[in-house]
Image (cartoon, rainbow, N blue to C red; front, side):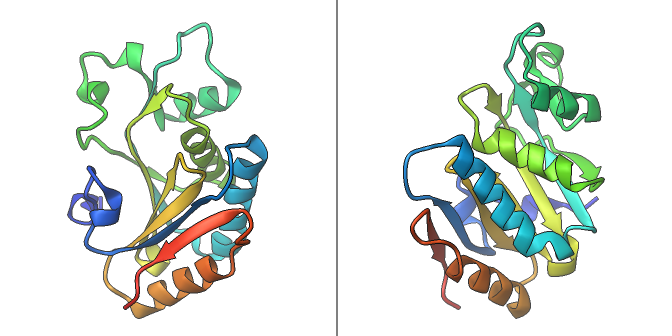
Length: 181
């Protein structure tokens, strides 16, 4: 298990030591833009996703009889917990660093995790990260309809891949920021 605590500042991801940048929606929230944001990320990083490790401490505050379908899949896989099931366990305080590690199984898992984080309307709390091992890159979906990027070992190649990706985004739909090194 990778100790990702040394790479992440949970109070402000952008204050993490290897933070490279992010992108977010430029306009009002829409489900279509969530889908587009995830699709553009997946299309550009798909070749690096096979060795991905997922870290999740996500908690759902839904009632047992009102759980959306996308949440049910993640609950069954253990990537998401119901708050009612973990009031007395380590998940009870989402701000605590109680990550569970999951190996990449398919693109739908990353897509669904990203979707629920981006579409969060207050019923999800916690943290979710994807480590793209080949790039030594930590990626996080966020509720501003985008992804952020943190280099884990300062590799220039990771920075250049992220920089090229962010610079090629549709600037009519997404804002982006990248550090200069």
